[in-house]
Image (cartoon, rainbow, N blue to C red; front, side, top):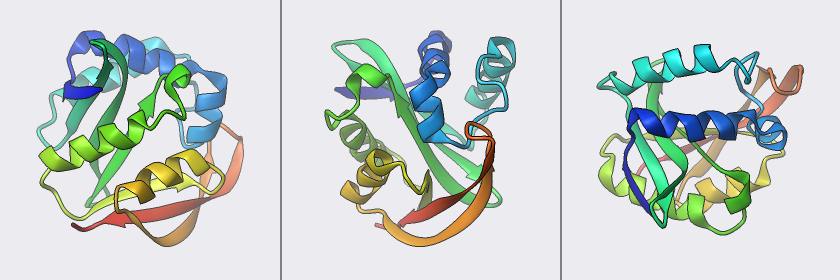
Length: 155
């Protein structure tokens, strides 16, 4: 498993990951229409050109399986990640995030996760993120407001 700077052709896999029903549910805080490919591609092409965003592609045997991304929201550096469902539960996201944190110098970095997304919570905790609070937000993938856990990485 390795990571590298994302390129436009990687977006196809990122989009497919987003359209998986279970992945979309677990991510919770998703676009209103996760199947709108044109909007998705336009948004991510623009983000790839933004110097404040660090977008890295996760590869297994040179196959694109997902991404790790640092972005800025409301003045805070935030982290997000996703991998193809067939790779869930194998520790790859945790390893990818560990590699990402070695190359991304911004601190602190925040992570946000749905209250019941235990896999994502473990990814953050394995990498030294500490839970610092909770909030309530509308989760498009669930059609209702849910609790979100807020984590921070300082090291």
